[in-house]
Length: 351
Image (cartoon, rainbow, N blue to C red; front, side, top):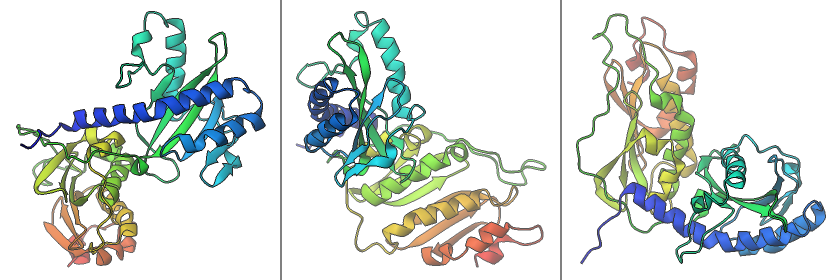
């Protein structure tokens, strides 16, 4: 008998529990080793380097002081990355969470000890935070950071151990979540002409488009999504997945702005028979962004991409819909940069 499928959110929670269980013990031991040499950069880097193979799937390891300033180089598979020494990470989402927890837990440690997550065997993962996924500054890909507190023998926080992971490198579910079957409505802006002097309204998706496009790119490249519709005006996406090709899934903004959502999709290699090369996916998505903001009266309401037939679909505020081979679509950068002027139909650029 088939097992019932999980919901998207429950699937994410299970993935995070699995990661906490695998990461806590090696980082806890590393924090203990570093506490004895804290403040000695060379010895801390040696301890981090020695422990690196024991932290599964890790991309970078480093130590930070209580102000979230990095006090070691990054440790990576390729060796030391020295340029990160002295980097202030206090404004990064994972450190904001850790710094907030430091003050809260130290002041209320006895009353709120239960706030630390539990491992599956019932052992509490004290001084450990698996922070929410985020979009990396450099690669613009979903990433995850685990933060382990480092304390001295008196229990005083000395600083933190940070462990960075690329979401695509982490083990993830082999079962696709089940799409809920209930009525959902996403309200967008009305078509041009139904409201006097109407221009494009900035949607919720428009305000978070950097994150949305990075999440969508990740789903396509590493999680088996082969067809996507981005509804810019109503701030939602519809995706089709190779593991379940006959059913689509609707992603609301809370899913599209949370890179953790990628954990709910099985990892799949990019298909070799796709017409759109993997390295061109981001360029197509970026061009959709340009069309969305091209003109206040003539603008993109929704855009689609199917990687197997290589077609980009475009639906505008007026002028109807257009379907274009991806390579022709990518040649139109100069059109996007010049914006459409009054008296020129946008369809002239696509037909």
